[in-house]
Image (cartoon, rainbow, N blue to C red; front, side, top):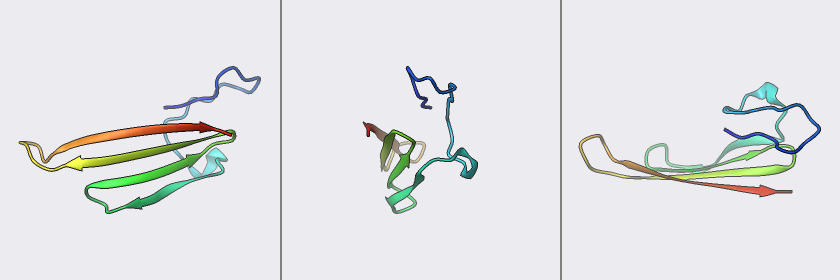
Length: 73
């Protein structure tokens, strides 16, 4: 989830990306559909990048590791 803080704009807590959200863009930059992916969400004044990788194994198919990076414009 993310939101604009310290802004005169209405508080808008986001937890999904929908076409009606008026984002500058969002989508996958690369992925294999199974074990890794990188996606970018471009909101009005910042960009969120999420990266994940899956380590196979274990009793439940594997473990996921995530990294989320935010860059203000």
